[in-house]
Length: 350
DNA sequence: AAATCGGGGTA
DNA sequence: TACCCAGATTT
View 1 (cartoon, chains in turn yellow, purple, cyan):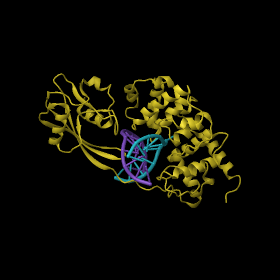
View 2 (tube, helix red, strand yellow):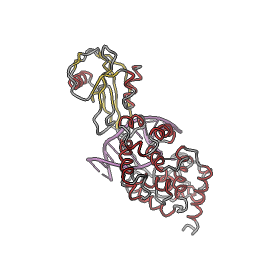
View 3 (cartoon, helix red, strand yellow):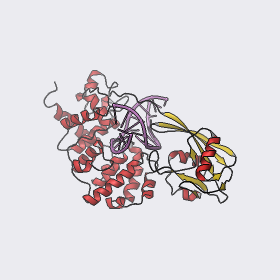
View 4 (tube, rainbow, N blue to C red):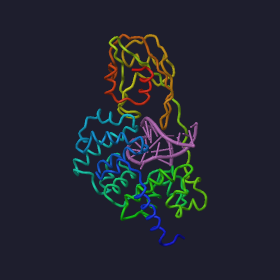
C-alpha cells in the first residue's frame, strides 16, 4: 500500500514541476475564460503547434464572446479552414451565443458550462479548472497515458467507460489549491516526458511515484485496443473552367463529412464515364473530353479517398440542379475549401 | 459500445 | 505504414 503522504508528494512534485518548466503557450498567457475555452476546443485531437496560429488569428478576429456569437458563418468557417473537425467551430459559436445571451459570460459552474454544445467531459473540466480554479477532472489522452503508467491501470483506454475510471483517479489525487496546474501538469507531462513511445523516465519529476517505471513496464502501458483500418472510396473530380476563366464549384451537403464546404465537382466513383454522367446531370451541362490532371490519396480518420482529378473541355451550360456556381480564382479564396480540394487546386496552379 | 468527424506530426 | 493528438456527438 502506498504511504499516507504519497498523494501529497505526487501532487507537489507534479505541480511544482509544471509551474517551473511549463512551455510558454499563448493560452497560458491569458486568464480570459472565453479565450481559454477557444483554446481547449481547438486542441481537441489537435496538436499544440497546429493550434497556435489558428488561436492567434481567431482570438484577434473574435476577441470577445459577442464578436463570435454574431459573426457570419462563412467568416467563422474561413477562420477554421484547415483545422479539421469543422463541427467544433459551429458548436463553439452556438455555445458562445447561448452563454452570452444566458449568462453574459462563460458560466463558472461545471453543470451550466457542461451543458453547452461541443463541451464534453474533458473540455468542461479543463475550462473550469484552468479558467476558474474549480477542482474538476480534465481527462484526455495524455492524462490516461500518464496515470495508467503511474497507477498501473491496464483497462483499455479505447473503451468509453474507461475515461470515467481515470476521472475518479484524478479527483482522488487532484490539488484542490491549484487544480489548473495539476490538470495541466498531467497533460504537459504526457506531451513532453511521458510520451506514447520511449518515455523519458529519467527526466520525469514523478518517476519515484510511477508504478510502471519501478516495474520497467512503461512501454507496455497504456493498454489500447486497435481500431480497424479505414475503407477506401474512389472519387472522381472533374474540373471545369468556362471561357471567362471561371471555375465551377459545388457545395457539399450541410451535414456529414466536410459539411457545407466547397469542392470542384466530385462523384463517388472510380469510373470517369460514370462521373461524367453524374456531374453532367447534377449541374445541367454537357462535359467534353477528359484529361487527367492529378491523382492522390487523401486519408481521413475513418475513411480514405482515392482521388483522380480531370480537367475537361469547356461545357455548354444548362440549368444547374444544385447549389453551385462559377468562380474567378480570386473568389475561390472566399470559399471554405477542404484539403482534398486544395490539393486539386494546387496541382492545377489555380 | 461503436461509428462519425480532419488534418498533421512522428517513428 | 501505424499511431496518436488538451474529444464530442450521433447512432
